[in-house]
Image (tube, rainbow, N blue to C red):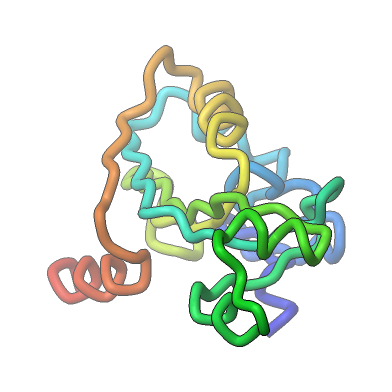
Length: 156
């Protein structure tokens, strides 16, 4: 499964560990293919954020956060912030997003999927790549997996 994170979703090439830098706050394609996306019709789907525990000074370490974990301590924590502070972490939002570019099918049928903790940086980088003044953004009130299964059912 770890190999999938390192494959270019447009060409199918395997740039190895370099892909982690390429896809940070972006989609999972190699920089040499980004100019081909300029001026293409697009839609950016942003899903409900998930709250995660992140390292205080780094985004590199994070854990899933569950509210019921707060009650397992004696005395129980009174707030999520108190819980995060106790472990030396902070609560941040992790956004899943899909950039749909119908003209650029690639290996993923035009649905470029990724997640980010900095949605504003992602929007800025995608605007720069697509060379548009305004992104076509649709906020979705469900999780990404249910939306993808519904989309694939309607568009075989």
